[in-house]
Image (tube, rainbow, N blue to C red; front, side, top):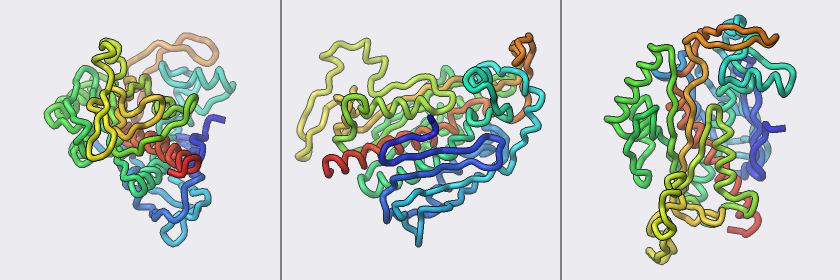
Length: 360
């Protein structure tokens, strides 16, 4: 019912923001993949709150515990269950807002759908749910890296009206992790950090764009017509909290080109078919062609801000909301590992589907 993602490599996330714990069950991971908690922890550390002065100050270590599916350091082929305890949950901080609909949050939407909602930090609508995605994504990334040589690197491309200059064909994760905003353009990163700090002082928030590239993804991934690779990637990335837009390859900018300008000519290189340009973003006809997969995800400004906002109560009465507490003034830096995880989950699933159907 909406909490499970994937076909062969399938995940189900569970837990609420201020509940006892959050986690994920990963089903369909092939056996004999070397896996330790440290492999997962490295990715969770990139996602966790309180990691810098420009993120939420909620202090969670987000230590993962593998409960099943791994024996003697290898996956068994059985469901892998991963748990992360919530150790700094403060649901009482949300008590003043339990009857208020926070603007641009999921409060009213959940009430309209279920007739009940968890007002303690938003429950399942909180970005804390993404812990399960990132943990599962760490397994998917390792599977892809070891069996296909695939490398997935995401980075902050834009914050508000500040745009970074990044070469997706050469950017490294080391360059991305070199600063707290996760922008591999150093000069631009400093400007972004200053702008985020300004927004926090104003009691406001900022949005932006995360760009992600998957290099050496196998050709042949994707299943026409309804499970096209870009369609599943779009669903995956648009399911992330605060995401509002998706582009692949030339994206919307491609609409300003002619066909002769946009088409990617084929050529032979080292005995392999390649394209001279990559306006298609590495996918044609819904199937990967072996070129780098290049995508962008737009994230809205964080909905929780410190400024007074007009709203209504769950009884329909006019009210003023002045949010307090811990929140990210900009979700982009912590969204980077989330984006990588969702891309990895889609590629791992389609890799197993391709191997199962075609044997390659």
